[in-house]
Image (cartoon, rainbow, N blue to C red; front, side, top):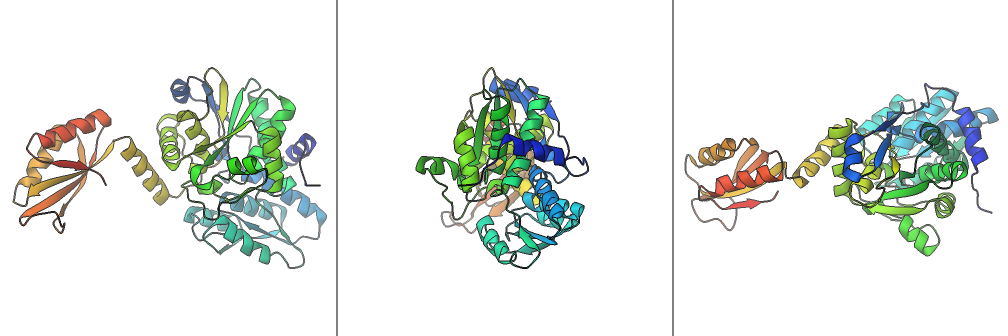
Length: 407
């Protein structure tokens, strides 16, 4: 019989999470901006404000406390793209057990550094979570060593389920909870808790399109894998779910939707601008589903879970640049000119008169379709949005230039 968890398991886990220095009771905050955009009452569950920056500490601490009580475990081994890694490292250090975490070579450096900072030895192996996972299992054969799976473990999932109990205590009138889904530990635990507390609460899981395994798994009736997941939401790019989490999703989750990276980037930007919250792609997936209409919660009290806030600055810069370009606040223009003095000044002046800010400009002369004596000027321009961008393009075209938009 496959392992599962019950509400009693989650309640016992909640009793173990009694140290606020390890697992915090994170707030729920109402978002007027997101509520107006979705015609719902949106309350953000701020789980990214955990000490390690994600919900993963809940499951890790629940597991490590029990391993410590057994008395014969001196080291744990885990595999993670970053958030489970930090949870295991912190929990292991707290209970006095050594920890080794295998992370993909593609893991953000901030997550690698943080994991080491919490006390774990970090091994970088493989490009994907599944490759890191395979290597981690080979390190767990020594006596006194136990492997701690990120989601295929009842104790881990029960720990994640404490978030559902906490959420319901804070907002018992909730109608819909939207949960990011990677390996399924969070959504499985939260759904199990909420189905016991109030079966009328709707649970919606959200996956990134480049790592979506649950819809096909539900269709086929068994877990399936994506061998090479590709998404900016690295925290939910597990490439698979387990038999345990599959059964919990099948039995307790009402719906699973998929969002693309453009929607996730837009949600990250919206959370920064309007909610003043820095959330990683995995954590913002729940809000992306609301903003893009994949979850219709009009007239409801809806809680998107912000599952993580661990993102490195280089990734953040790339994601926000992409989002600004999509909103036409970052405009890329290519203008064909006669390569003579004064042309750059003339075009720059036209852009400046419209109140737009030129961030960069360069000459491209080695292009096949150019005639002798011609060049392209490529501008990167910051505007106020779509209508402002149109005005900028019109101003340049009014000077007799042909303008192309692009990268």
